[in-house]
Length: 196
Image (cartoon, rainbow, N blue to C red; front, side):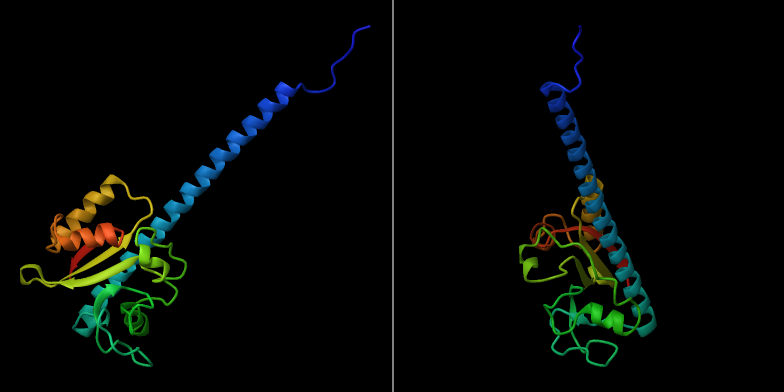
């Protein structure tokens, strides 16, 4: 009488486990990449909204919004910081942030900066949360412009090309110390330069 084999051989089991492992690895990598892309999209969207809010504020209020570097007083119950000019948009780094002004004067939603991904390039971002968007007012050739820069976790070559172009439009050359600081030290990989 012939004996029937009712089970799997060890080789068949190993092959099945290896295939399941490979599929799990591919799925995990795809999920991680999707998370990174979603974070970059969220940062780009926030930077676009900050740029739009600055344009609106400047057009309606007649001056560039105050807050950020050099601020000396918290916003309190007012609708704008008393002083300060540029820097990281929303951090605990300054007495009054640009975000404080744009939110208090209702040009931005207060939850815009909630859940933005961490800037993995800027090593001080461990102690400086939300170091992911920077704004400066510049006057290249006497023309009043604003520069909004933002970090990206997975920039592509087109992002690097656009970053260099946007900074050049605002009067910052690719070999300048400012460019190196923004790109290499602070991890900014995207930018928008526009008239204000």
